[in-house]
Image (cartoon, rainbow, N blue to C red; front, side, top):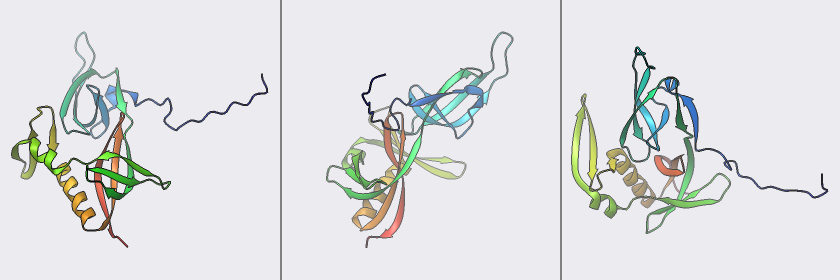
Length: 196
């Protein structure tokens, strides 16, 4: 051994994987799974019985947690699937810049300035059709966009409008940011009252 001291700086996520393995047969509805390299929330799971020469298979239906796209996969129940590490963090909203970037206050007092809200123009220019869909008496609205792969549901559009309105009216707002597999997106809003 040498007398030299070695100091290493490390972050909590240094070398950490974006996913972890989990046996397909143990993944349940409302859990998370990676389908086609996208982090998804499981909305439906069905398991087929073991065949004469094969394994029981799990059929997963998931909704991409960032773009709302529906994805499906079939995996033998004894095989491992990738499950994303999904984190939700609350930040206080400090500012919204003209180009749509939000400035958020972290727990340690620093600012996080790398998230962007879609602008009114970018949302409205992409809308191709506006379709109300009735599902067992509940009405769900979907915006279908020019880019065929991109669906933005009404609740996200509504969230964007509430953040913008609340900020412009001078309210103190806390936003929840969901992160998984290197992506982040604002997913919820809390109004903590008027600014002092």
